[in-house]
Image 1 (cartoon, rainbow, N blue to C red):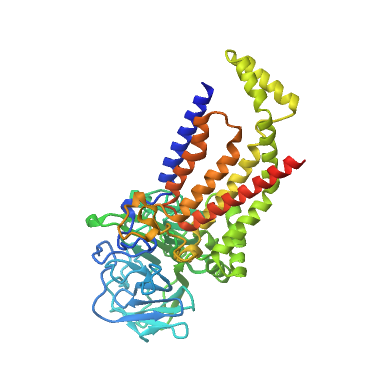
Image 2 (image 1 turned 60 degrees about the vertical axis):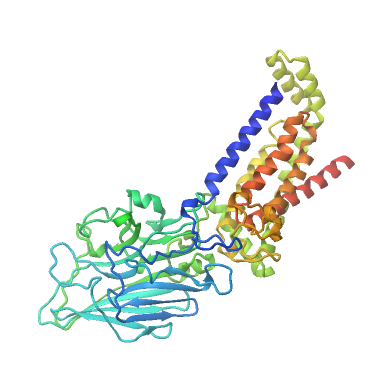
Length: 583
């Protein structure tokens, strides 16, 4: 009877694990990008690209047929629309949408998305009468191209002879810097107000859909990481990110930090000047059945209220310069983010990468993994070496757990005898087993405790591999051209021998099958003490099949890691079994 209960528990556990992992880690089909029919292509949807028919309401309007200022360096290229001074699109030159040689570059901002882009500008304060630039303003540029060696100045003068200037510059990577100033060419002193702000707006976003990964608005506000998913943005929210509506002076003011929009691999972020205080806004809306997402930072000195900084008027012939703001448009590569964090003293800019709850473990693991990759020149080899390092470091715990389980295995005949003797008296059975453990000086829980210590470490490594952009489009052993995508082969197409298309739910590649085989062998090594045939079949064969099917949908880089980890675990067990037999 007890064995049947144990079997039922195992069945329920498998079901919970299967369904839980499926819901937690599997992409949402409704959000999956269906643009690439090839099963060899990477799972797309990891870039911020609004569709061509995106809605242009609620703010920034579509690009006119007029002049655009282009920008380009070694890493990015794009254009600035002179109508509204809006960055309309930005391409990442080193990153392609698929592993195919002729694949187009990843777009952080899309030129096809009417109503979307990034810009800095001025907002009118309550009751302000000065004519300020807006999204309809046509600016004049002193150069047609922005490069690391050549800045561009945009200028516009209102009817009162108040001239506004936007000075654009860029580095040789992923940063566009913006400075603003106002010159008074009139005969009177003028108060232009203090409406400095930066905004990034995007349309319908295609995400990876994994629940273990944050995608949406992200920022560091007053030393605290703030995250709002796209779903939450559409619902609204409370806290430092008050949904913005109405005039600038409404709502709660925030603090210092940075703010952006992110998905699995890419980030578009606003970095205010010199950690200036302000209000950090993140919100979503559904105008005309189309999704819109916006992040915006409004500098505190531009806000009305008791804490606002009072700025003097600008005398005739005088000018006023404003802060040096930055826009980051690039990949969430830790080395790049850390470099900007140091240069610009940005508060925890590396946390744009979702290291998860175990940040204090995952970040050091990533540093070690990145160092290994630099040494061996291959990300897969770095994963294999890293797994060996972790296994060696955890070997004392594994050995202790194995010794405890071995001693428990030796006691199985006596435990079975006690179960037969006290089959009808549970209390006496429990007491007899406690006495047996005391007599043999065995703690039945001691074998599990070392495993509990290892779980956060192993999960952290799994998380590191899942979020690492280094896995994206990295190749390994012939048919693996993208470690961040599932194994492209399939058992039901003869691993590519037969030409027919296999449904997604039947897609089980070579590496998931290898992982399942290692699980079977590992369970066979562990199940020698199990006497119930049904339970042994369940643990040895059914669970590996469940995990094989589930992992077939995961990035193949994770499956390779899991397979290699199983192999090392079997080698450890074999060594410890031989060692204990010889002692």
